[in-house]
Length: 124
Image (cartoon, rainbow, N blue to C red; front, top):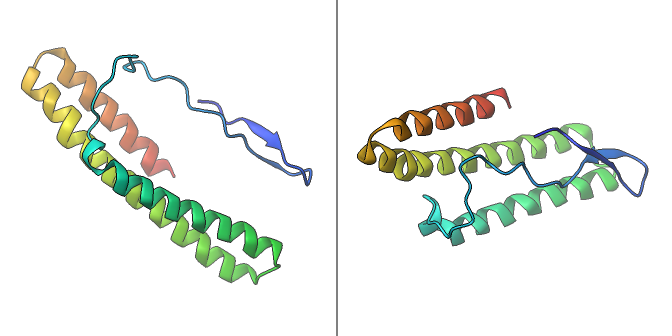
């Protein structure tokens, strides 16, 4: 996915809220993903992170001291990283394990997919 930029009302540029490209394994059939059992918990966690980000916007708007804002940025980043790690674990336990049981080339594809996801997480 390319990083798209949009212009805010204040004239600043910010990443646009475009949706990621459709993944090659995505189908239009209903499927149960590894995170399905914890979906409500994940949504609650993401809403809390969203609140942290809104808090950052408020801090900047209120001219809060730079170091205090950076502390909140760090907390928000850690919260997102923790969420990503949990989601990755669920992917490994569900999708990769399921592919391993089925055997064949699917396991190689799932392991490669997970490896690429881990690489993206490490670059952040």
